[in-house]
Image (cartoon, rainbow, N blue to C red):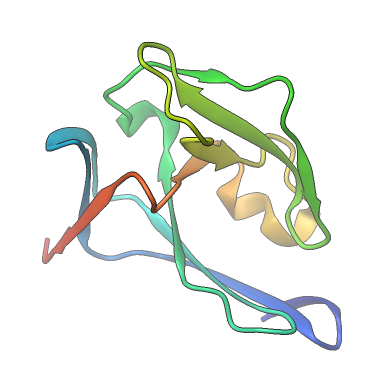
Length: 122
């Protein structure tokens, strides 16, 4: 378990199932190499799936005017669809993750407001 202070922890594990993500009924990700991040701070956050960029089947572009910082993971990069962008950010990543979160570098998480998650045995 990793921590930055006594009340902020995260665990990043390999997700040993096939993960399919859909947007408006279309498959945008299929992977068997996803990571699952479980984080606890002042509250318990919902688990987040991070997928390798090479498994993404849609074109996404960085959103240059949006940013945030997490003391565990680092500075977030936000992404949206190149064609027909969503109203809010579509995905995020940590391009230069802090040492405690290096496992998610090169991976992207998707905004759960827009996607359907399907998890199946391998």
